[in-house]
Image 1 (cartoon, rainbow, N blue to C red):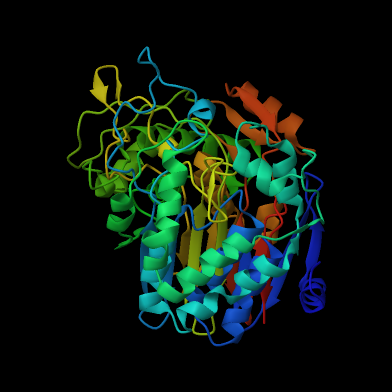
Image 2 (image 1 turned 60 degrees about the vertical axis):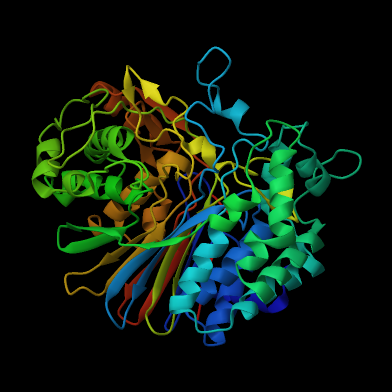
Length: 567
């Protein structure tokens, strides 16, 4: 059960309002430090580190280790992550890339069937073939070397204790287990189901001593405890001998993996400066493009969940996703025209294609003013996984981190108590389309394209204003862009912005989240030429922290088990 202190803290801190989708959203106020994350136990671990004098990066590490236990279907040490860090002392923002990497055995045709046609993503995911070399541990170590204050080993203590003592299964994990349908994947059945085949239910106590043992080893030995030795061997054995689709990952692949510090992508939106993750994530470029194109219109025209706001957002999103499919990939393998795609004149030329009265239909990629290859756009199936956290510490250091094992329960296989990712299925299954290469085709040592969009916004003085991010597969881009419009243009609080129904267009149908206003909005958009679809959109998990006069306000998406905590 939730500890007494945590339960009391949560109850005291929460402000609750009604969501249109009949959910509830929480908002927390703090003066010194704050964390918003996808599970109360994980958020509490991060808060404990900051109370002990730790940095926002320290808190993120502790939070991630607990998330790997309590939300294993979404993220963990067997996956990857992107972290944005703002240093308030230097007013510098940097990013850390822990994206999973393709092993040396990867080939451009690895996801084609015997006839040369792309397989379905659902068919390609389970087993060893889809597993990329995990990047979270080395990324967190790299960030800790630069921004950590507490000892590395201390950051593992909350997760180790919770793994050994157990915790009550939360609503999201219970739903995921109940809906899991891969009966031929024994790791998931053995860990999350009873002997009689019934799933673990919400509130049942779950322990994972194998995960605790892995964390103890990593806490003591650092990254070598994961990328070498018995854990590395267990990962390789699991991948090579998976019950389905054995992969070719080796000990050498794991040993050679390196996380990277990269410059973020940044751009202006009205009087604000927005920074997010650059390639191999497409998120930052696409978010900046959407916002940049919408600067042509007044804030009133962009009001979310109005026909004008939804229509204009859908048009800008179409154009950004068209460029994403054509140009974005691992910059070590492809000349990604980042400067061209975010060039103000280029974005203005794309914005000029938006008709305020009529849907443009499927958008095509533009011609950015920077060298780029002749490429064919990829096709991106939409599957949801992932988690997000955002943190501010006592010094004003800000972390926005999106972390993932890709889809629910990743590749559906486990090693030493943790889930292994299926991130290689983020590559384009077709290496060539219409006679032209696809930028995001698989290759040895390549990082698959991501949509993760951890984002930090600064005011006109250059001071921190808001941090936000979300899970949700390719839809992450629209989730983040929409909430920023709500906060920056409509002057909503984080809780108000999160309470609005989602609007998405990934260059296809316009997708609306079910709410009391859906039918009326759908009819108005249909009249403008949109093909409209509706759904519950439970894949998002937005977490946000805003700077206010006397401190911070944090909010967590009610579609998950998240919470914001602070002092």
